[in-house]
Picture 1 (cartoon, rainbow, N blue to C red):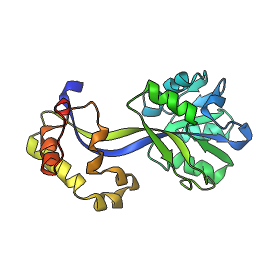
Picture 2: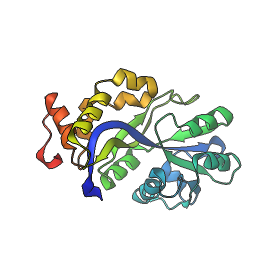
Picture 3: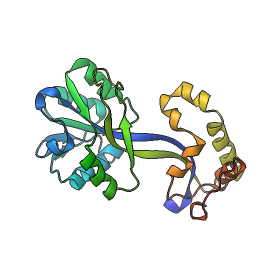
Length: 217
């Protein structure tokens, strides 16, 4: 149950992004009205949120579900009009499409972003930087979902402490594993706004001079 889960430390953000063939003329989420849109696997993060995002923006699309590789293939074959996804950037399937096809990628316009953030306050504004993908030399504003390492409340405090300390004291080593670790930083603890921290993690933060609110203990 949710009550048995405790947060340990921030990991990275998962941005939401769309890719289309340039020939489609689609340049925004609002343009997806009536279009065939794959939103990733059913039950996954993009498959859960993208249909709700489109509803928040006022878009009624023909939504389908598929894995990233299958959706990319469907886009190339003209079976869908857009592939909306969410993952750490650069999204490998998007990068492969950019290398093989003339594509356009986008997140949310300022108006769309505002509507999504109002409907989903747990989301955070995010910008996919220029040059993240070959041929896409423009910033793409969107939203992203923060990911946290979590543990069962039964985990011994000492183990939760050591895991949190190992991750947050060794960001340089984490960066050697994956670039998204650039966000695995102690100062991002406050991106968790609702899940109680594990007592072992709280001990680590307090040793570092951070006061965790009582509502998150």
